[in-house]
Image 1 (tube, helix red, strand yellow):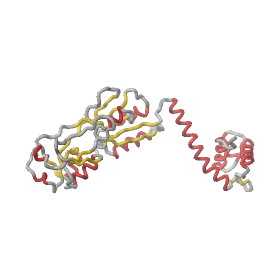
Image 2: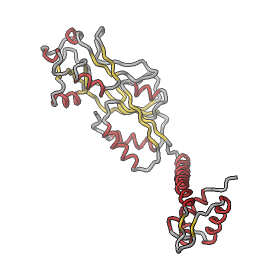
Image 3: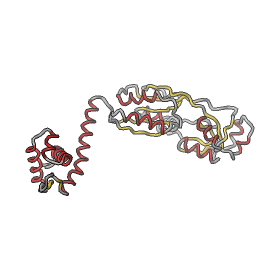
Image 4: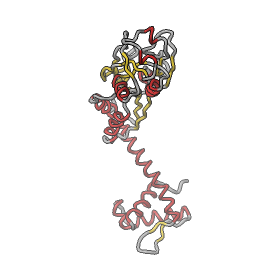
Length: 298
């Protein structure tokens, strides 16, 4: 039979915090004799002395300090468990899984999460980074409760709600020392076809992977995400389309050259989406918060 329980730990913690049995008893709304009996009984059961009572204050012995140090972890865990059970009973989610498109800027995302944590839902957040159709894949196959930045139309079948985040314009960009940088504009498909493209790999696990801006027969370097694609293009490993905002920033720094093309890539629509049956308060708060977001590109 276990000789130690949470009430014992609560009593020892209170005595240590308040400096005496009497003060701890007042804080716990008990009589001092009840605390004295609880500690003495525990000391007898464990065959150790937990408090040195030789002075004016009750001072923990080394054994008592070790018990309290580990015991406080248990008290915290018990309190958290109690609170989580209450939140679940009230319909608050214990965890939210959020799939985020790789074009979403981390600082913007984290600013939203900081505001979320200030609401004290107690809900844990689990974030995954997705590329192209990976957001849709995560939502429809149950890997995410909310997706932010899912591109273009979602898969058929429904079961989810969408909210438009707006459109993103893409431009064709090459490194300053790439041969295409000196070609006359607008670049023709036959010009572009001669050179390797850089493509970010769709992170879908089940849905057919999507590609964009590639020509049939073109050599392709496939990289994990748009951040890796940007570096590859700046190093002249290939060419391709990038969000206009990103390309303009890098072109201003002299790391890219933006080229007009005869057949430009159309703008892409991006969405936030969530399962239609999800009604938890933590998720609904995040949805409302992100609906107010106007700038979100990396």
